Length: 89
Length: 433
Image (cartoon, rainbow over the protein chains, first blue to last red):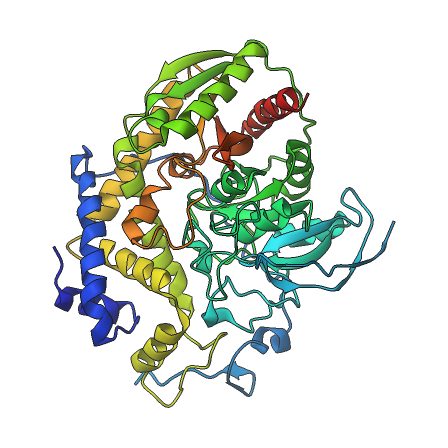
Protein backbone atom coordinates (compact mmCIF):
# COMPACT_ATOMS: atom_id res chain seq x y z
CA UNK A 1 0.00 0.00 0.00
CA UNK A 2 1.55 3.30 -1.04
CA UNK A 3 0.28 6.68 0.17
CA UNK A 4 -0.15 9.91 -1.74
CA UNK A 5 3.04 11.06 -0.09
CA UNK A 6 4.92 8.03 -1.47
CA UNK A 7 3.56 8.74 -4.93
CA UNK A 8 4.70 12.34 -4.67
CA UNK A 9 8.15 11.12 -3.66
CA UNK A 10 8.35 8.70 -6.63
CA UNK A 11 7.18 11.47 -8.97
CA UNK A 12 9.99 13.60 -7.58
CA UNK A 13 12.60 10.88 -8.12
CA UNK A 14 11.45 10.43 -11.71
CA UNK A 15 11.11 14.17 -12.45
CA UNK A 16 7.56 13.46 -13.61
CA UNK A 17 5.72 16.37 -12.08
CA UNK A 18 2.39 15.60 -10.45
CA UNK A 19 -0.44 18.07 -9.93
CA UNK A 20 -2.31 17.88 -6.62
CA UNK A 21 -5.57 17.12 -8.45
CA UNK A 22 -4.24 13.95 -10.09
CA UNK A 23 -2.55 12.62 -6.96
CA UNK A 24 -5.59 10.82 -5.50
CA UNK A 25 -6.73 8.92 -8.62
CA UNK A 26 -3.13 8.12 -9.51
CA UNK A 27 -2.44 6.70 -6.04
CA UNK A 28 -5.56 4.55 -6.23
CA UNK A 29 -4.63 3.06 -9.63
CA UNK A 30 -1.04 2.67 -8.51
CA UNK A 31 -2.14 0.60 -5.52
CA UNK A 32 -4.40 -1.63 -7.64
CA UNK A 33 -1.46 -2.42 -9.93
CA UNK A 34 1.01 -2.97 -7.08
CA UNK A 35 -1.50 -5.28 -5.36
CA UNK A 36 -1.52 -7.34 -8.54
CA UNK A 37 2.32 -7.39 -8.57
CA UNK A 38 2.20 -9.02 -5.13
CA UNK A 39 1.54 -12.33 -6.89
CA UNK A 40 5.34 -12.32 -7.38
CA UNK A 41 5.63 -13.14 -3.66
CA UNK A 42 4.70 -16.69 -4.67
CA UNK A 43 7.80 -17.01 -6.84
CA UNK A 44 10.41 -19.15 -5.09
CA UNK A 45 14.05 -18.04 -5.09
CA UNK A 46 15.72 -14.64 -4.63
CA UNK A 47 18.15 -14.38 -7.54
CA UNK A 48 17.88 -15.54 -11.10
CA UNK A 49 20.59 -17.87 -12.36
CA UNK A 50 23.69 -16.56 -14.11
CA UNK A 51 23.70 -17.33 -17.81
CA UNK A 52 26.60 -17.76 -20.19
CA UNK A 53 27.61 -14.48 -21.74
CA UNK A 54 30.46 -13.52 -23.98
CA UNK A 55 31.94 -10.12 -24.52
CA UNK A 56 30.45 -8.31 -27.49
CA UNK A 57 32.44 -5.10 -27.02
CA UNK A 58 34.43 -3.88 -29.99
CA UNK A 59 37.89 -2.39 -29.88
CA UNK A 60 37.84 1.26 -28.86
CA UNK A 61 38.79 2.59 -32.29
CA UNK A 62 37.27 5.77 -33.69
CA UNK A 63 34.63 5.23 -36.35
CA UNK A 64 32.79 7.60 -38.64
CA UNK A 65 30.11 9.47 -36.74
CA UNK A 66 27.46 12.08 -37.44
CA UNK A 67 28.58 15.62 -38.29
CA UNK A 68 28.28 17.99 -35.31
CA UNK A 69 25.71 20.09 -37.17
CA UNK A 70 23.38 17.05 -37.50
CA UNK A 71 23.81 16.07 -33.87
CA UNK A 72 22.82 19.56 -32.77
CA UNK A 73 19.95 19.87 -35.22
CA UNK A 74 17.28 18.74 -32.73
CA UNK A 75 18.64 20.52 -29.67
CA UNK A 76 16.39 23.38 -28.54
CA UNK A 77 19.40 25.52 -27.57
CA UNK A 78 23.07 25.31 -28.44
CA UNK A 79 26.08 27.58 -28.23
CA UNK A 80 29.55 27.27 -29.79
CA UNK A 81 28.87 23.66 -30.80
CA UNK A 82 27.62 22.65 -27.37
CA UNK A 83 24.11 21.78 -26.21
CA UNK A 84 22.77 24.16 -23.58
CA UNK A 85 21.35 22.55 -20.45
CA UNK A 86 19.74 23.90 -17.28
CA UNK A 87 22.10 24.84 -14.49
CA UNK A 88 23.06 22.02 -12.14
CA UNK A 89 24.61 24.05 -9.30
CA UNK B 1 13.34 -0.74 -61.48
CA UNK B 2 14.12 2.49 -59.66
CA UNK B 3 11.43 5.13 -59.69
CA UNK B 4 9.12 7.43 -57.80
CA UNK B 5 5.91 6.50 -56.09
CA UNK B 6 3.12 8.83 -55.05
CA UNK B 7 1.22 8.01 -51.91
CA UNK B 8 -1.93 9.90 -51.04
CA UNK B 9 -4.15 7.48 -49.13
CA UNK B 10 -7.58 8.23 -47.73
CA UNK B 11 -6.51 7.81 -44.11
CA UNK B 12 -9.91 7.93 -42.44
CA UNK B 13 -8.72 5.56 -39.69
CA UNK B 14 -5.86 7.81 -38.50
CA UNK B 15 -3.37 5.02 -39.22
CA UNK B 16 -0.57 7.42 -40.19
CA UNK B 17 1.12 10.19 -38.24
CA UNK B 18 3.22 11.20 -41.25
CA UNK B 19 2.79 10.37 -44.91
CA UNK B 20 5.34 10.93 -47.67
CA UNK B 21 3.53 11.99 -50.83
CA UNK B 22 6.37 11.44 -53.29
CA UNK B 23 8.86 8.70 -52.53
CA UNK B 24 11.76 7.65 -54.69
CA UNK B 25 12.89 4.07 -54.39
CA UNK B 26 15.67 1.83 -55.59
CA UNK B 27 15.71 -1.66 -57.05
CA UNK B 28 15.75 -4.94 -55.14
CA UNK B 29 13.49 -7.51 -53.56
CA UNK B 30 11.00 -4.85 -52.43
CA UNK B 31 11.41 -2.53 -55.44
CA UNK B 32 8.62 0.03 -55.46
CA UNK B 33 6.62 -1.67 -52.70
CA UNK B 34 5.08 0.86 -50.30
CA UNK B 35 6.09 0.00 -46.75
CA UNK B 36 4.84 1.80 -43.63
CA UNK B 37 7.08 2.13 -40.58
CA UNK B 38 5.96 2.44 -36.96
CA UNK B 39 6.74 5.86 -35.57
CA UNK B 40 9.21 4.63 -32.93
CA UNK B 41 11.68 3.56 -35.65
CA UNK B 42 14.11 6.30 -36.72
CA UNK B 43 13.83 7.56 -40.29
CA UNK B 44 16.41 10.07 -41.43
CA UNK B 45 14.76 13.36 -42.38
CA UNK B 46 11.23 12.15 -41.51
CA UNK B 47 9.64 13.23 -38.24
CA UNK B 48 9.66 10.42 -35.66
CA UNK B 49 7.55 11.04 -32.55
CA UNK B 50 6.70 7.71 -30.85
CA UNK B 51 3.21 9.29 -30.84
CA UNK B 52 4.39 11.54 -28.01
CA UNK B 53 4.23 15.30 -27.63
CA UNK B 54 7.72 15.14 -26.15
CA UNK B 55 9.15 14.20 -29.58
CA UNK B 56 6.92 16.41 -31.70
CA UNK B 57 9.14 17.90 -34.39
CA UNK B 58 12.03 15.48 -33.81
CA UNK B 59 13.76 14.72 -37.12
CA UNK B 60 16.22 11.83 -36.74
CA UNK B 61 19.64 12.56 -38.26
CA UNK B 62 20.10 8.87 -39.13
CA UNK B 63 18.17 5.79 -40.25
CA UNK B 64 17.48 2.77 -38.05
CA UNK B 65 19.30 -0.31 -39.34
CA UNK B 66 16.03 -1.87 -40.54
CA UNK B 67 15.13 1.31 -42.45
CA UNK B 68 18.48 1.26 -44.20
CA UNK B 69 17.87 -2.39 -45.13
CA UNK B 70 14.40 -1.54 -46.47
CA UNK B 71 15.85 1.24 -48.63
CA UNK B 72 18.63 -1.03 -49.90
CA UNK B 73 15.96 -3.57 -50.89
CA UNK B 74 14.17 -0.89 -52.96
CA UNK B 75 11.19 -0.35 -50.64
CA UNK B 76 9.35 2.96 -50.75
CA UNK B 77 8.92 4.18 -47.17
CA UNK B 78 5.58 5.93 -47.47
CA UNK B 79 4.88 6.98 -43.92
CA UNK B 80 5.09 6.62 -40.19
CA UNK B 81 2.27 4.87 -38.39
CA UNK B 82 0.35 5.72 -35.25
CA UNK B 83 0.93 3.82 -32.02
CA UNK B 84 0.41 3.94 -28.29
CA UNK B 85 2.81 6.57 -26.95
CA UNK B 86 6.28 4.92 -26.75
CA UNK B 87 4.58 1.54 -27.36
CA UNK B 88 2.80 1.64 -24.02
CA UNK B 89 -0.66 0.28 -24.61
CA UNK B 90 -2.83 -2.39 -26.17
CA UNK B 91 -5.26 -0.25 -28.17
CA UNK B 92 -3.41 2.70 -29.87
CA UNK B 93 -5.69 4.98 -27.83
CA UNK B 94 -2.65 6.20 -25.88
CA UNK B 95 -1.36 8.17 -28.88
CA UNK B 96 -0.91 11.88 -28.22
CA UNK B 97 -2.28 12.44 -31.74
CA UNK B 98 -5.62 10.63 -31.41
CA UNK B 99 -6.55 6.97 -31.62
CA UNK B 100 -6.41 4.81 -34.73
CA UNK B 101 -9.73 3.15 -35.59
CA UNK B 102 -10.16 -0.48 -36.54
CA UNK B 103 -10.91 -0.53 -40.30
CA UNK B 104 -13.21 -3.54 -39.82
CA UNK B 105 -15.39 -1.72 -37.29
CA UNK B 106 -14.63 1.91 -36.54
CA UNK B 107 -16.28 1.72 -33.11
CA UNK B 108 -13.45 -0.58 -32.08
CA UNK B 109 -9.72 -0.27 -31.47
CA UNK B 110 -7.18 -1.79 -33.87
CA UNK B 111 -5.17 -3.18 -30.96
CA UNK B 112 -1.76 -1.92 -30.05
CA UNK B 113 0.69 -0.72 -29.76
CA UNK B 114 1.43 -1.13 -33.51
CA UNK B 115 -2.21 -0.29 -34.31
CA UNK B 116 -1.42 2.18 -37.10
CA UNK B 117 0.66 -0.38 -39.00
CA UNK B 118 -2.05 -3.04 -38.67
CA UNK B 119 -4.85 -0.66 -39.69
CA UNK B 120 -2.88 0.61 -42.70
CA UNK B 121 -2.52 -2.98 -43.92
CA UNK B 122 -6.09 -4.04 -43.09
CA UNK B 123 -7.46 -0.98 -44.93
CA UNK B 124 -5.35 -1.80 -47.99
CA UNK B 125 -3.25 1.38 -47.81
CA UNK B 126 0.01 -0.59 -47.79
CA UNK B 127 0.75 -4.29 -48.34
CA UNK B 128 3.28 -4.48 -45.52
CA UNK B 129 4.59 -2.56 -42.55
CA UNK B 130 7.03 -2.70 -39.66
CA UNK B 131 5.83 -2.91 -36.10
CA UNK B 132 7.54 -3.51 -32.77
CA UNK B 133 6.58 -6.06 -30.14
CA UNK B 134 7.54 -5.62 -26.47
CA UNK B 135 4.69 -7.63 -24.94
CA UNK B 136 2.43 -8.35 -27.92
CA UNK B 137 2.42 -5.06 -29.80
CA UNK B 138 2.70 -6.71 -33.23
CA UNK B 139 0.58 -9.79 -32.59
CA UNK B 140 -2.31 -8.05 -30.79
CA UNK B 141 -3.12 -5.56 -33.59
CA UNK B 142 -2.52 -8.29 -36.18
CA UNK B 143 -5.17 -10.40 -34.43
CA UNK B 144 -7.61 -7.51 -33.95
CA UNK B 145 -7.32 -6.33 -37.58
CA UNK B 146 -7.24 -9.76 -39.25
CA UNK B 147 -3.69 -9.64 -40.63
CA UNK B 148 -0.43 -11.54 -40.05
CA UNK B 149 2.29 -10.34 -37.65
CA UNK B 150 5.55 -11.90 -36.49
CA UNK B 151 7.49 -11.18 -33.32
CA UNK B 152 10.93 -12.50 -34.26
CA UNK B 153 13.26 -14.38 -31.95
CA UNK B 154 15.09 -11.94 -29.69
CA UNK B 155 18.35 -11.00 -31.38
CA UNK B 156 17.39 -11.68 -34.96
CA UNK B 157 16.52 -8.11 -35.96
CA UNK B 158 18.72 -5.14 -35.08
CA UNK B 159 17.21 -2.62 -32.68
CA UNK B 160 19.68 0.09 -33.75
CA UNK B 161 17.58 3.22 -34.31
CA UNK B 162 14.53 1.87 -32.48
CA UNK B 163 13.65 4.37 -29.78
CA UNK B 164 13.96 2.11 -26.76
CA UNK B 165 11.14 1.28 -24.37
CA UNK B 166 12.15 -2.10 -22.84
CA UNK B 167 15.34 -3.36 -24.46
CA UNK B 168 15.38 -6.89 -23.09
CA UNK B 169 11.89 -7.63 -24.42
CA UNK B 170 11.34 -5.75 -27.67
CA UNK B 171 11.91 -6.70 -31.28
CA UNK B 172 11.07 -5.05 -34.59
CA UNK B 173 9.02 -7.36 -36.80
CA UNK B 174 7.10 -7.69 -40.08
CA UNK B 175 3.34 -7.26 -40.54
CA UNK B 176 1.35 -7.97 -43.74
CA UNK B 177 -1.89 -9.39 -45.15
CA UNK B 178 -0.30 -12.75 -45.96
CA UNK B 179 2.32 -15.06 -44.46
CA UNK B 180 4.28 -14.89 -47.73
CA UNK B 181 4.59 -11.11 -47.46
CA UNK B 182 5.57 -11.36 -43.78
CA UNK B 183 8.25 -13.86 -44.79
CA UNK B 184 9.54 -11.61 -47.60
CA UNK B 185 9.71 -8.54 -45.36
CA UNK B 186 11.41 -10.60 -42.64
CA UNK B 187 14.06 -11.78 -45.10
CA UNK B 188 14.98 -8.12 -45.67
CA UNK B 189 15.22 -7.00 -42.02
CA UNK B 190 16.74 -10.05 -40.26
CA UNK B 191 20.49 -10.44 -39.78
CA UNK B 192 23.48 -9.29 -37.82
CA UNK B 193 24.23 -5.64 -37.07
CA UNK B 194 27.35 -4.81 -35.07
CA UNK B 195 25.67 -1.64 -33.78
CA UNK B 196 23.22 -3.71 -31.69
CA UNK B 197 25.17 -5.73 -29.11
CA UNK B 198 22.24 -8.17 -28.72
CA UNK B 199 22.09 -8.88 -32.46
CA UNK B 200 22.89 -12.43 -33.62
CA UNK B 201 24.27 -13.57 -36.93
CA UNK B 202 21.13 -15.36 -38.10
CA UNK B 203 19.85 -14.21 -41.44
CA UNK B 204 16.51 -15.43 -42.75
CA UNK B 205 16.34 -16.81 -46.29
CA UNK B 206 13.40 -19.17 -45.98
CA UNK B 207 10.62 -19.91 -48.46
CA UNK B 208 7.48 -20.87 -46.51
CA UNK B 209 6.45 -24.52 -46.87
CA UNK B 210 3.03 -26.10 -46.21
CA UNK B 211 4.59 -29.42 -45.17
CA UNK B 212 3.78 -29.99 -41.48
CA UNK B 213 3.18 -33.77 -41.44
CA UNK B 214 4.39 -35.24 -38.15
CA UNK B 215 4.62 -31.82 -36.48
CA UNK B 216 3.98 -31.93 -32.73
CA UNK B 217 1.92 -29.02 -31.37
CA UNK B 218 1.73 -28.27 -27.65
CA UNK B 219 -1.63 -26.94 -26.47
CA UNK B 220 -1.21 -25.13 -23.12
CA UNK B 221 -4.34 -25.36 -20.99
CA UNK B 222 -3.76 -21.80 -19.70
CA UNK B 223 -4.42 -20.46 -23.21
CA UNK B 224 -7.98 -21.79 -23.07
CA UNK B 225 -8.67 -21.15 -19.39
CA UNK B 226 -9.89 -18.34 -17.18
CA UNK B 227 -10.12 -14.93 -18.80
CA UNK B 228 -10.19 -16.28 -22.37
CA UNK B 229 -13.48 -15.75 -24.20
CA UNK B 230 -14.81 -19.29 -24.87
CA UNK B 231 -16.00 -18.21 -28.34
CA UNK B 232 -12.43 -17.16 -29.20
CA UNK B 233 -11.13 -20.44 -27.74
CA UNK B 234 -13.54 -22.43 -29.93
CA UNK B 235 -12.45 -20.68 -33.13
CA UNK B 236 -8.79 -21.35 -32.26
CA UNK B 237 -9.50 -25.01 -31.37
CA UNK B 238 -11.10 -25.41 -34.78
CA UNK B 239 -8.02 -23.91 -36.44
CA UNK B 240 -5.80 -26.34 -34.53
CA UNK B 241 -8.10 -29.10 -35.84
CA UNK B 242 -7.23 -27.93 -39.36
CA UNK B 243 -3.53 -28.33 -38.54
CA UNK B 244 -4.28 -31.87 -37.33
CA UNK B 245 -5.97 -32.65 -40.63
CA UNK B 246 -2.74 -31.57 -42.31
CA UNK B 247 -0.85 -34.26 -40.39
CA UNK B 248 0.14 -32.52 -37.13
CA UNK B 249 -0.50 -34.08 -33.73
CA UNK B 250 -1.45 -32.17 -30.59
CA UNK B 251 -0.14 -32.71 -27.08
CA UNK B 252 -1.71 -31.04 -24.02
CA UNK B 253 0.75 -29.13 -21.84
CA UNK B 254 0.84 -26.55 -19.04
CA UNK B 255 2.84 -23.39 -18.40
CA UNK B 256 2.58 -23.02 -14.59
CA UNK B 257 4.66 -19.80 -14.61
CA UNK B 258 1.79 -18.09 -16.49
CA UNK B 259 0.37 -17.42 -13.03
CA UNK B 260 2.89 -14.63 -12.47
CA UNK B 261 4.23 -14.02 -16.00
CA UNK B 262 2.12 -10.90 -16.54
CA UNK B 263 3.20 -9.31 -13.24
CA UNK B 264 6.83 -10.14 -14.04
CA UNK B 265 6.44 -8.62 -17.49
CA UNK B 266 5.01 -5.35 -16.18
CA UNK B 267 7.68 -5.03 -13.49
CA UNK B 268 10.46 -5.58 -16.03
CA UNK B 269 9.07 -3.39 -18.82
CA UNK B 270 8.26 -0.47 -16.53
CA UNK B 271 11.67 -0.73 -14.84
CA UNK B 272 13.44 -0.61 -18.20
CA UNK B 273 11.14 2.21 -19.34
CA UNK B 274 11.89 4.33 -16.27
CA UNK B 275 15.57 4.20 -17.20
CA UNK B 276 15.16 4.55 -20.98
CA UNK B 277 12.76 7.48 -20.84
CA UNK B 278 15.01 9.47 -18.53
CA UNK B 279 16.64 10.82 -21.71
CA UNK B 280 13.57 12.91 -22.57
CA UNK B 281 14.36 16.07 -20.68
CA UNK B 282 14.18 18.79 -23.31
CA UNK B 283 17.93 19.21 -23.67
CA UNK B 284 19.10 17.25 -26.72
CA UNK B 285 15.68 17.09 -28.39
CA UNK B 286 12.05 17.82 -27.70
CA UNK B 287 10.38 20.91 -26.27
CA UNK B 288 12.95 23.26 -24.78
CA UNK B 289 13.79 22.98 -21.10
CA UNK B 290 14.01 26.38 -19.43
CA UNK B 291 17.78 26.63 -19.01
CA UNK B 292 17.36 29.42 -16.47
CA UNK B 293 15.63 27.09 -14.01
CA UNK B 294 17.39 24.50 -11.87
CA UNK B 295 17.61 21.19 -13.69
CA UNK B 296 15.03 19.28 -11.60
CA UNK B 297 12.47 22.03 -12.08
CA UNK B 298 13.26 22.39 -15.77
CA UNK B 299 13.04 18.65 -16.48
CA UNK B 300 9.87 18.28 -14.44
CA UNK B 301 8.13 21.00 -16.46
CA UNK B 302 9.11 19.42 -19.78
CA UNK B 303 8.14 15.91 -18.74
CA UNK B 304 4.84 16.88 -17.15
CA UNK B 305 3.78 18.67 -20.33
CA UNK B 306 5.29 16.17 -22.77
CA UNK B 307 4.39 12.69 -21.48
CA UNK B 308 0.88 11.26 -21.57
CA UNK B 309 -0.82 9.64 -18.59
CA UNK B 310 0.11 6.01 -19.32
CA UNK B 311 3.75 6.86 -19.97
CA UNK B 312 3.96 8.76 -16.70
CA UNK B 313 2.32 5.85 -14.89
CA UNK B 314 4.82 3.33 -16.27
CA UNK B 315 7.82 5.53 -15.51
CA UNK B 316 6.49 5.87 -11.95
CA UNK B 317 5.86 2.10 -11.59
CA UNK B 318 9.36 1.32 -12.81
CA UNK B 319 10.94 3.94 -10.57
CA UNK B 320 9.04 2.41 -7.65
CA UNK B 321 9.97 -1.19 -8.52
CA UNK B 322 13.66 -0.29 -8.67
CA UNK B 323 13.68 1.94 -5.61
CA UNK B 324 15.61 1.10 -2.49
CA UNK B 325 13.66 -1.27 -0.24
CA UNK B 326 11.45 -2.59 -3.05
CA UNK B 327 14.00 -3.90 -5.58
CA UNK B 328 14.14 -7.36 -4.01
CA UNK B 329 10.36 -7.67 -3.76
CA UNK B 330 9.64 -6.65 -7.34
CA UNK B 331 12.53 -6.50 -9.82
CA UNK B 332 14.60 -9.41 -8.47
CA UNK B 333 11.49 -11.61 -8.14
CA UNK B 334 10.40 -10.69 -11.66
CA UNK B 335 13.75 -11.86 -12.99
CA UNK B 336 13.33 -15.21 -11.23
CA UNK B 337 9.81 -15.47 -12.65
CA UNK B 338 11.23 -14.73 -16.10
CA UNK B 339 13.70 -17.62 -15.72
CA UNK B 340 10.77 -19.86 -14.73
CA UNK B 341 8.89 -18.89 -17.90
CA UNK B 342 11.98 -19.74 -19.96
CA UNK B 343 12.31 -23.07 -18.13
CA UNK B 344 8.65 -23.94 -18.75
CA UNK B 345 9.07 -23.28 -22.47
CA UNK B 346 12.26 -25.31 -22.76
CA UNK B 347 10.64 -28.22 -20.93
CA UNK B 348 7.66 -28.13 -23.33
CA UNK B 349 9.85 -27.68 -26.41
CA UNK B 350 11.74 -30.86 -25.52
CA UNK B 351 8.51 -32.70 -26.39
CA UNK B 352 6.83 -30.53 -29.05
CA UNK B 353 7.87 -28.45 -32.07
CA UNK B 354 5.54 -25.49 -31.61
CA UNK B 355 2.94 -24.23 -29.14
CA UNK B 356 -0.45 -22.98 -30.34
CA UNK B 357 -3.26 -20.97 -28.78
CA UNK B 358 -5.20 -17.73 -29.18
CA UNK B 359 -3.20 -14.51 -29.66
CA UNK B 360 -5.63 -12.43 -27.57
CA UNK B 361 -8.23 -13.51 -25.00
CA UNK B 362 -10.98 -11.57 -26.82
CA UNK B 363 -11.67 -9.85 -30.12
CA UNK B 364 -11.05 -6.09 -30.52
CA UNK B 365 -12.30 -3.93 -27.66
CA UNK B 366 -14.64 -1.01 -28.18
CA UNK B 367 -13.01 2.42 -28.00
CA UNK B 368 -12.61 3.51 -24.34
CA UNK B 369 -13.71 0.07 -23.12
CA UNK B 370 -10.41 -0.48 -21.27
CA UNK B 371 -10.25 2.73 -19.27
CA UNK B 372 -8.83 1.05 -16.17
CA UNK B 373 -5.06 0.49 -16.60
CA UNK B 374 -4.92 -2.89 -14.85
CA UNK B 375 -7.72 -4.38 -16.96
CA UNK B 376 -5.84 -3.23 -20.07
CA UNK B 377 -2.63 -4.88 -18.80
CA UNK B 378 -4.47 -8.17 -18.17
CA UNK B 379 -5.37 -8.47 -21.86
CA UNK B 380 -1.66 -9.01 -22.66
CA UNK B 381 -1.55 -12.29 -20.74
CA UNK B 382 -1.25 -14.57 -23.80
CA UNK B 383 1.40 -12.56 -25.65
CA UNK B 384 3.91 -11.58 -22.93
CA UNK B 385 5.29 -15.10 -22.28
CA UNK B 386 7.00 -15.15 -25.71
CA UNK B 387 8.73 -11.81 -24.97
CA UNK B 388 9.90 -12.95 -21.53
CA UNK B 389 11.39 -16.09 -23.12
CA UNK B 390 12.69 -14.34 -26.27
CA UNK B 391 11.05 -16.92 -28.54
CA UNK B 392 9.46 -16.31 -31.96
CA UNK B 393 5.69 -16.02 -32.20
CA UNK B 394 3.32 -15.32 -35.07
CA UNK B 395 -0.34 -14.38 -35.23
CA UNK B 396 -2.33 -15.51 -38.26
CA UNK B 397 -6.07 -14.84 -38.82
CA UNK B 398 -8.14 -17.97 -38.10
CA UNK B 399 -11.79 -16.96 -38.23
CA UNK B 400 -14.19 -14.53 -36.62
CA UNK B 401 -16.41 -14.09 -33.58
CA UNK B 402 -19.44 -11.83 -34.16
CA UNK B 403 -17.77 -10.39 -37.25
CA UNK B 404 -14.43 -9.54 -35.61
CA UNK B 405 -11.24 -11.44 -36.45
CA UNK B 406 -9.46 -13.90 -34.17
CA UNK B 407 -5.72 -14.63 -34.28
CA UNK B 408 -4.10 -18.05 -34.01
CA UNK B 409 -0.78 -17.68 -32.19
CA UNK B 410 2.09 -20.07 -32.97
CA UNK B 411 5.19 -19.95 -30.75
CA UNK B 412 8.43 -21.81 -31.45
CA UNK B 413 11.89 -22.51 -30.08
CA UNK B 414 14.37 -19.65 -29.97
CA UNK B 415 15.64 -19.06 -33.54
CA UNK B 416 13.06 -21.47 -34.98
CA UNK B 417 11.21 -18.61 -36.69
CA UNK B 418 11.18 -20.59 -39.95
CA UNK B 419 9.03 -23.26 -38.31
CA UNK B 420 6.40 -20.91 -36.86
CA UNK B 421 6.18 -19.23 -40.27
CA UNK B 422 5.68 -22.63 -41.95
CA UNK B 423 2.87 -23.60 -39.56
CA UNK B 424 1.12 -20.26 -40.12
CA UNK B 425 1.60 -20.67 -43.87
CA UNK B 426 0.24 -24.23 -43.85
CA UNK B 427 -2.85 -23.04 -41.99
CA UNK B 428 -3.36 -19.99 -44.22
CA UNK B 429 -3.07 -22.05 -47.44
CA UNK B 430 -5.37 -24.81 -46.13
CA UNK B 431 -8.22 -22.42 -45.30
CA UNK B 432 -7.71 -20.37 -48.44
CA UNK B 433 -8.06 -23.43 -50.71
